[in-house]
Picture 1 (cartoon, rainbow, N blue to C red):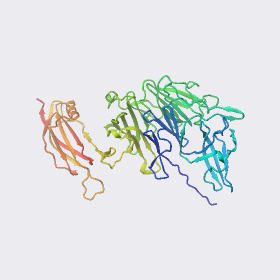
Picture 2: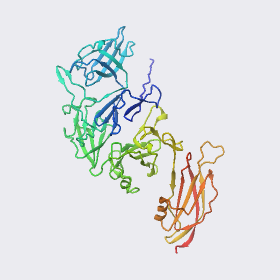
Picture 3: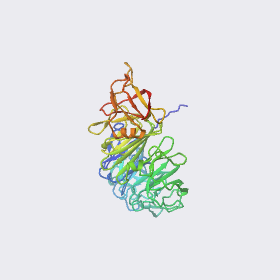
Length: 554
């Protein structure tokens, strides 16, 4: 028997928000092409806090009083307002007989408050390819009760293919079995949102900042809080899993296993479903999480977050929380002085480069202080970028097109940027900015004993590259500076403060360099290598030197 296989593809789209507008990746044009979502201009306020999450082939935007939906699955039927309470319910089937055995069908998903727009998944048979405005539409009234049924074609004004953009509200009242069914009320304001176990979850209500809200399982439009069934909507305090006594700052779901609720001074975990046997337990009652975007997971399910004492890691499976900055950067919180009212901290796991990118960005001007945490070295590397590049959001986009699989940075100037290993300058909008980079080697003890000095006799650099016909790029040059001091702290401080070096020089060619014969005598030696020249980058293969003892310190 012959078997025919039809390939099914999952298409991913990037949705981005900036300048009070919503944009989406229009794959009908080409991968990476961003198009403004129709009628979205000015519908949200990007000067206010905003979060966004995906679910049910939609992007849900949570922006205070602005709750919106970017819908990439549903077709919209626009019609004359239906009779109060007499609209189709979620799951009802609409049918349009277009003649000649052509039919259009819609499984209803949502109806707007005014009952003028019906949204649902459309499919076709008999050669039909779309709903028409020239034929009646009837309902099977499986749950709701459409009036008029059918909707006359004269009452149908438009058919709009996805994507569609609309307000996120509850489903309007529907008459079901002769009884008017209501779908509750969403919070008046929310700034946090996520999807957990099929439920849309909201928090960040400024009137009740300690409260969380969950919609019905599988239904973003039902917010009638009750515990009547395991699928029912629920909010904190309505069941055994209660509300919190702390300000909620972020919602962090891990698949359908658990939901972490990060607060100002504590962290909680919700396991299971809150209506059906779930539990809400403390993870830590002394550590808080900075903000809505101050976390990321790595590829093994370990959670990294910026908390009240620096950067933390919560191992997959709920091991003990570890402060990663406690030893190498003990004063990072006071040094950075990031305030949630003026700064945003964003974090992203970079799968390609093996580490965590951490950005502390000042909202007013984009000025930033950043850190790269390397999984390979377990070390922190300070970075900063042009103000226009200041990160307001980060996302690793696992795009269908491999050219766009990367860690994306939503920047202060509205551009979406990514790290480019081949670029030698930072993109700062209309122009490029030279990258200023440096490396300080560990301070070297010149003598064998504490009261001995040493003398540097020679120093040899091997700069990367140099093959006459090699395929790899050659390193550009660099500047080196040698510092000497009687103690390690002074030597390091001189380098940090930019004090005049004992000796400086430049290397401009690749490969092994001529031996540098600068003679330096002292107790501790420091070496700094740097480059701040536009369109240049450098790679060092090795450094070797010769040191001889020079007697006791006098």
